[in-house]
Image (cartoon, rainbow, N blue to C red):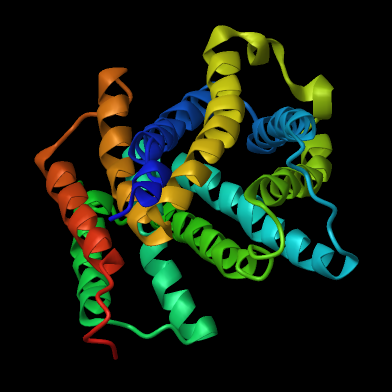
Length: 304
């Protein structure tokens, strides 16, 4: 291995780990805001708008923004429709219905698995035995966490369905972003993603009452701190670190780190007293981690 390759990967593992930790904490911070009865569309718009302003200023000063061609605008709009618009609606309302950051994180952690299926359908990327085995293994892991209390109520099933809507949104995003990934850098794509996403949520934000509908507790520490953390740390910092990780490790290796998200969310939720850790959750999270990691393993042989 030459020294250029070694130097290229310096700092990529810490970048991936820090980004994943922040995204794991995002489920806990989101639930804290939800528990304060802040309207979903209100905090989602403010999160995205804040992230857009911060990222735009940073990219402008750093000279990272690129001019977008007219023929690519439709793809960037479709990309933002899938994520953050569809994704955040599914994730937020799914978390409300299931009342669990851990369950939400476990479902969302299956995104790499669904991306594999999407790549097979739209880009004819072949399955491998490892991918098929990984997909199958994740199913009992999801069931262990999602139904640990035997809850099959309509609200719970509705919440799980919404979380899978979020997964579909993220999968759609991953499929569409491939069309523009070779033409623009990640900073340009992200700025458009957050900006167009904020535009999608603006009418819903106004419908929810706009600025006048924020309420007195919006500016309390219990709301302002997690919201600022979501906008700055989870949307801006984590994204920049994730770019760094992908450049050094590649998307397949980087995605393996995403399997840590459910564990981080479960530990964080337990640490602040939001939720308890049970053996069902530990076993389910472990099975999902194994399944997703196995599905990401892609040897050149054994394709189907």
